[in-house]
Image (cartoon, rainbow, N blue to C red):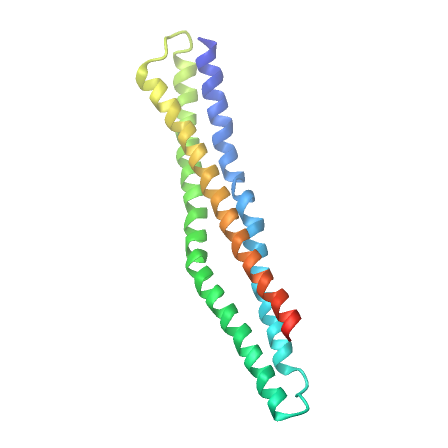
Length: 166
């Protein structure tokens, strides 16, 4: 029956690790926000750059700046709804971590109390549930990091286009 105890201990340890899963998504989220800020700063620099020699050149330049501004705005608008989801997903990770940790502690107590007893179906279900919180938190943070990376890549493409056109 030590197998039951080992599985429960593994579940408890991994559920405490859920709290570190945020480290999967936080760097990508910070990078996305940093890249957006840099893109806006670069666009502002181009806006303030010296005027062109002729009115035609200036109008063309202003039009290109406005085009880049529109692209950044649309990307920002798309990512701002995701930003709200990011915060919600990070909170969900905390909730899953708390739930998993409480569940694991109860399982640890139960397994210590009934160390030599057989694992019941409900016991197996609770153990499975404790692992589900772990899997859920990992998936949430992995998908959040992935989505943040996609927005970062799109913003970097706009920045590259800015460098080429402006």
